[in-house]
Length: 400
Ligand SMILES: C[S@@+](CC[C@H](N)C(=O)[O-])C[C@H]1O[C@@H](n2cnc3c(N)ncnc32)[C@H](O)[C@@H]1O
Image 1 (cartoon, protein in one colour):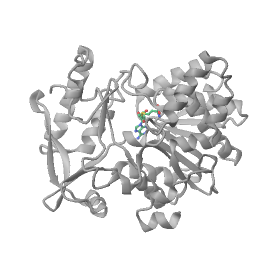
Image 2 (image 1 turned 180 degrees about the horizontal axis):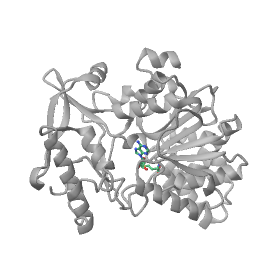
Image 3 (image 1 turned 30 degrees about the vertical axis):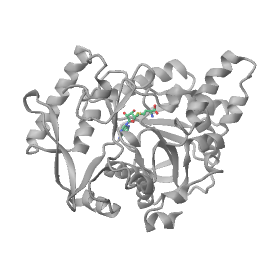
Image 4 (image 1 turned 135 degrees about the vertical axis):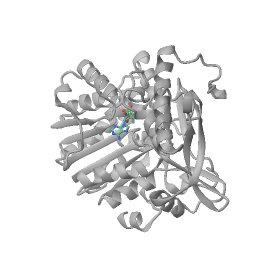
């Protein structure tokens, strides 16, 4: 397939990367054939991102950071991890001394959190990482050994979820990377989008079938207008529920871009939020550059709160990233850098601007805290808590 218009000016991928992509496309085409000529979009996205050794997050190419495809907050600035560390320090002070980070990417957040927590005298007893990509696990090990050698000994990688956990679970930009199902309303019916084609090196195409089962009932509850296409986050809901079930006592914090259901499924957002990132260009065609580009969707935070409630968790707070970072003291951290030293101060001021500005990450990115046996308010939500905007159903309203 040719690159879509926003990418047409870019050079084609290097031959080695193209060869990995071709192998992945062959694997997906094999699944389509075995599935009778169709697989769900969620399965396509799962293979494109995570097929062992071939998927976007599983093959060896560099994805995160300035020389990759996109930059996340912990990659952008250590201020992000230093603020989050203050929230963790409050919870560690309440006796939640173990931390699990889900989807640690390059290890940037683990490095800044562990360094700052040690500086605050609130180092966790254990820092576990749950990472689906073997390639990224290796990068995390290397980065921690290089940038936080004194803390690296505390870090252990989990192969599976423990049966029970007491402590803090965090995930930055993980929920948006979990495969989504896509539905559309068409002629009064609800259909699921899937992927067809790919045989003999041909391109993939979209194919629609009647939605069934859990997907159909989730879509029906949204009351979507006709000619509307959007994502439904069945896997993210199950993911949050699986953590909720093992959490005996503690808090989960997820930071990501997204909205409450009322905004997510607004009649005007009638083509959903699915996006792809390749070399810092965003576009909406997931069927090209198979395994070479990120595929992501915004998070439906109401569905996340609902999934947590289903697993016995309360919403402890929900707010914008800007409000959370301000509540955690980002302005004090910035103020502690002497403004007279322009060379030292200017980069941090620019990073803080990107993290906080409503035109950049400040408003679109949200922080949600869910918990069991933890009494709010938490530091990051002391001011500007918007938990009430999450409610779509009786179950959430009752928890708030
Ligand atoms: C967009 S990256 C974010 C990385 C990092 N948290 C950051 O902010 O820079 C998504 C991360 O989530 C991981 N991931 C996705 N699904 C996962 C799952 N089910 N379990 C564990 N890690 C997962 C990916 O491999 C990757 O490390």
